[in-house]
Length: 447
Image (cartoon, rainbow, N blue to C red; front, side, top):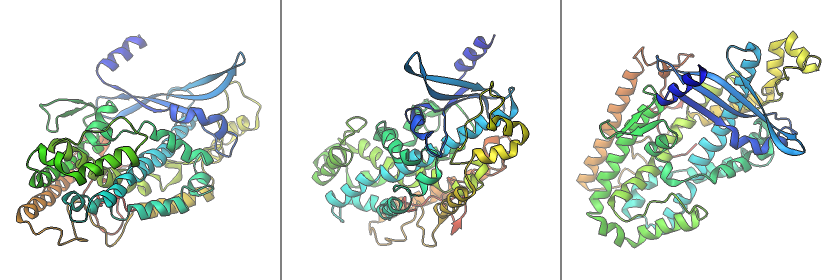
């Protein structure tokens, strides 16, 4: 009966997995000798009729020795089992989620991976080159903020190593995750297809059909992606009338060669060939997306979602007692005082305060922030009327998208736009004021 149910759910695209197994498992023996205690986790979700994802089961894995050989021991928790252990299993998934979010989605994909593009832009493109003019607002302050991160956040014994479960293996895990990084998967449509969240469908608005209709990041993001791509298309076609113009631009070709062969020289796959206007538009759209909207989506909601530590702990300090464990100190404490046990499982108070302070800073917009569709830092970037009109259309489209997103958030049938906490999804609203607002897409990865 269960087998038939799962097969039907798979056929209907109603089963989803949150998989943090492979990124954590090779490190568990080393992590679990430190303060941090972790599992390799997999969570299965079911897409219910109201459009929300319901967790069906959580698998927690630990390395073990079986018949003298390295093996693996799995435990599976379900909502209809022991309620306290189900809560603890969810907590360990959340701890892993916090680690992957910060080390991979945020640092690696937004901050670190963009550096070779910035360096090549300054080395290979003159300040008068049209692509330099297009990209420079999206590279503002990134190298500086990355240098500060290396000095105060991700260095040995820094904030990340002392407050996240992977501890001193944090940056190694991030570096290993880079091995699967590909440029051609960084744009939003490609990312959704890779993760199985969408399928190609030419009849749909963006050429994709989302398998989870109410997926705010994808729904709002595709609208933003379209705005960026239309602007880039107008800009690129203004300077490059056909494919031969792209191929003949020696500066541009040297720029792309340096990125592929030097900056990201260890990445042999996933590169577009910069042989025409279509490819140029895709490359520039992807770069602008990563530096602006992708970073905004993973960064500026951190304080709202993770500022309250129990909602998103970064450190796990206890494993869940085994079912046959009745006498250990942990097992007895879990039976007698579940709240105390939970608080000893998650981040210490000093760790929670430190993370809270950092993510408040990261989630804050500066008073002089420049948002997508604005060029306040370089107001005289062009005197060409056609380009100025195209940029004005870009800003107008973004304002229309903002109004559409606000309208979506008023729809009571779109349950994922607020979630259980009744917190509106506003991370891809293009514009914001100063401070912690949970909205706004700056031009660059500058915080």
